[in-house]
Image (cartoon, rainbow, N blue to C red):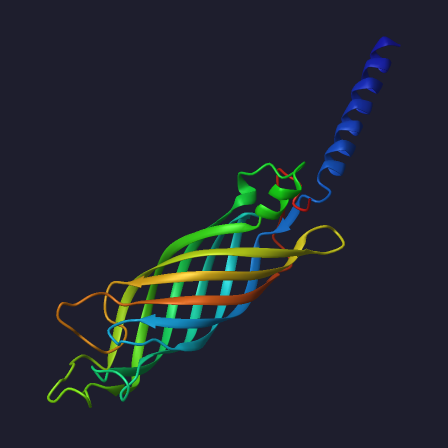
Length: 237
């Protein structure tokens, strides 16, 4: 009788443990993969005296090790423009078509914040910082190397270039949840500074300096079916 009672208690405890574990997973699940796209507004900071804003479209694939730690691979396609051939003393103006490949890690504040009892931390949890490595290729489609204001002033350079760069990014991710409380859609608003190790505008000057471009981007990501796993904390507040 005692053995039967002991087995019954053990079985009941095991069933209770499984039930509690299952309940504990409600709101903890997330997809390991997202696919998305974004538009960005770019500003090239090169050797010209003025800047202009151009656009790019970006496509990305994200691997989520947790809901708040992400690794992103992105392809960017767009234009970079700077300068004015008539209104600046140097006469420098360039317009180029570019494509870039970017791989970066992304850490959201929810990874280390306790947001379970704090509305303020719950807002902060979706802020993130990001850094990585990239490679950009530029093809100059229009360029002005002569100054109309300074006689015999000329700026040399190349009509195409390829260079690695470092992307540094800050942003905020709005998460939208499905009926299972899984983040199924993510809306991303970000600012990115891309520091290159070479030339992007077609001008080589003395003294030389490396070019950079900034981006303000708005994008959306969708969770890909399959690859669902669990997190140690509840994802929605």
